[in-house]
Image (tube, rainbow over all chains, first blue to last red; front, side):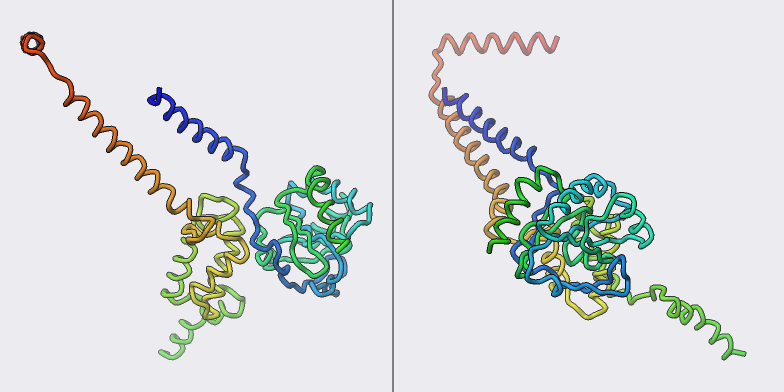
Length: 175
Length: 155
């Protein structure tokens, strides 16, 4: 009896491990920034290029940093979700326009709508590297103390917004 | 004459510096940058190193490495810079710590288990064989069978 049970048990363990492996998304690499201070930046704004926005200007509030670009296909997918979210006026969304051309970026916002309180220009992607951006779009939830609390890799889906981001925002705003 | 020719030789270099073209670096630093880039995983195409990948992020990170070498940072500092931003996943050689214990010791452990299993199996098999006794008539029968078998094969 043992002769068959042991291989069967080993096989089942293997299947369980492989099953878990299938469910994981290798594209989602957990960010080491969670719980740490958001990297500092000081970048020109997209609409008013003369004005500079820095991390310290945003301290004391909960805010979202959404990394986007006009060349990014998935950004278009998540854009309606962001527009809807912005209408609810819960927390401000700031855009990080990542490795884009100013004219393209402005035209894109004109065409699809602008959910951002302001967008800042990261033309050479250096701030993107500081934030560990590797797949646009990415969205960070940053708390009142300037700590990164959550990172959404890929588009913000209605599901992720409802089940992950909104409950977190509520908790952060109360604290 | 000679002087003017020398000046001509120097021209392309100064022109490069003016337009912001990358100036040829010294080979030691290039080698270091290359070596570091080979140790780091590109997160866009995850089975390639930063050195291999032509993804834009890899290009940017190679530039980061070159710049940091030029700033006089050592290899450890540059690796730390990458890990702080992208996590241990960027390292093709993950560090040994609590969460990676199974990663490092799992395969040798499985191998040892396999060897242990094999050892006990072979031992019990040898015991089983040793315990089997043949009677004289069985032995005779086996010899006859084997003899006829080899004979027929030779024919």
